[in-house]
Image: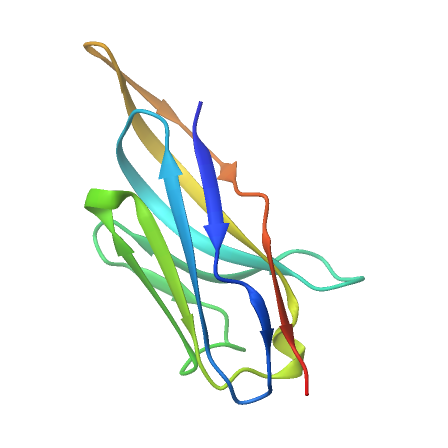
Amino acid sequence: QVQLVESGGGLVQPGGSLRLSCAASGSIFSIYTMGWYRQAPGKQRELVATLTTDASTNYADSVKGRFTISRDNAKNTVYLQMNSLKPEDTAVYYCHADAIRRTIGVTSIYEYDYWGKGTLVTVSS
């Protein structure tokens, strides 16, 4: 079983910064895509940023130039550095992992579409 555990959320003033982390565990050999999504109250979950193992990134237009996604493949961890935060960035941020190669004994299996439980980011003065 794959587990994703997020950390780093909290309350920050407008213009401030936060860094989110998400660590994946569960006999993982590699993860092709790791990313972040968010869901604000009363809204649908939306893409924030994704990063593949071949360094392909995808950002929502609303966060380009302010947020940076990075990852440590050796630790199966993805980060989201959020700068110049705005009140509209307030949301629960979810970690996502896709195309996960796991090793169970001598066998490799692939699993898809795992989510963390989310971490709350509140931007308010």
